[in-house]
Image (cartoon, rainbow, N blue to C red):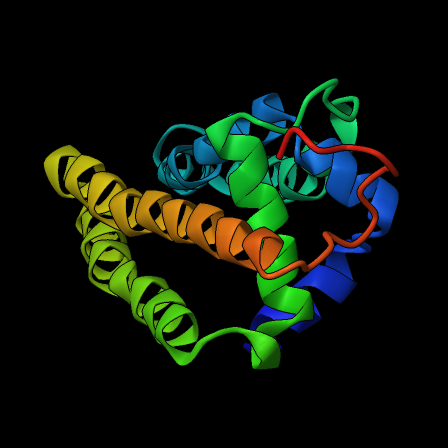
Length: 172
């Protein structure tokens, strides 16, 4: 949990940036990060040390992505609710039911086998392992987003407010 909060601080996630990140385009395009990361590392085969530039591009995309899209007109899409739920999860973690916290941790660690397969595939340059590793790591992440939607719904039903959400927004 502390790692996630440090990452949030490192990314400079203000209320405005969280709202921008709640745009479904931001959430869905973030799924490109792991394949881009794999491609950047694999590119060492084609472009040698220039692959560091590709890695830098991915790091810039990770930082830039939550900022590039405008806040959505509505917050009722699955991805928007998942992002807002993640915000609630990070800010009010101790106030959430234990089953939500426990499952979020399990899903976070659930990506590790996929990352290991991906890492091995990149090490031995096996495209099947790379593709399988990306998929295996992405599935728990998508399930994590779904858990964040559940957290948001429970939070809102208990009268909780989403930090930074514009006044009068009820379509969450």
